[in-house]
Length: 179
Length: 94
Image (cartoon, rainbow over all chains, first blue to last red; front, side, top):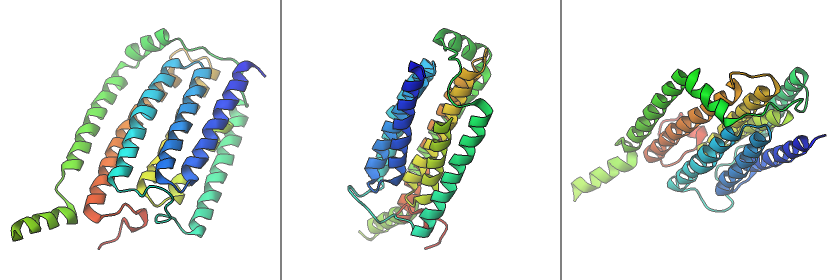
């Protein structure tokens, strides 16, 4: 049991516990906030595994951008603040989801533990310099393709947000005509 | 490895058990995070000269960011069109 093991176990436990809270809490906004805790703890896991750059990207993109987007979406869709039972599913569906989720977790854990063993044998320390050389050497075309994908996604999101659709827009137009 | 399995299972539960579509997206994010952790772990356990594990994780994070931007755009469009974002009513006509 090395220091790495202890640190990884702590970060992983925090991540799993807060992920569990994120999917089970009844407060919509708390769910997004627990997602922050979970992803930040995961970033700690990456640090322990020797992937500093991935940890930083995770922190910037997920905790910085994605969770802010989720919070914005919750606000724009008028999410109720505080406990809400409006969007509760039936007990049967929740039980079925619990069974499926637990079964998947058990199956995946069993397969992965038998394949790789539990716990890191040796830490292949990253080195951001090597990573950058590889990223802009061998992996440069997938990287460029990814930047094109991001551009397309940006334009698509913008177009979706500006699309004149729906009941409310139509009502507003009618109101404008009747005036 | 147990952490990967648990995170994925929790994410799947989140996708299946929620009706608010923004919270379903949170479940999807958790599953993608589990996949990224698996990539990095396997990359650090094996002798990974190409650093494929870490680079794949960076790609997965980027794709997840693009995916969530588009998905939230769709959710906002659905909200404007229908007035709610309930997953169980998503296929029904008014």
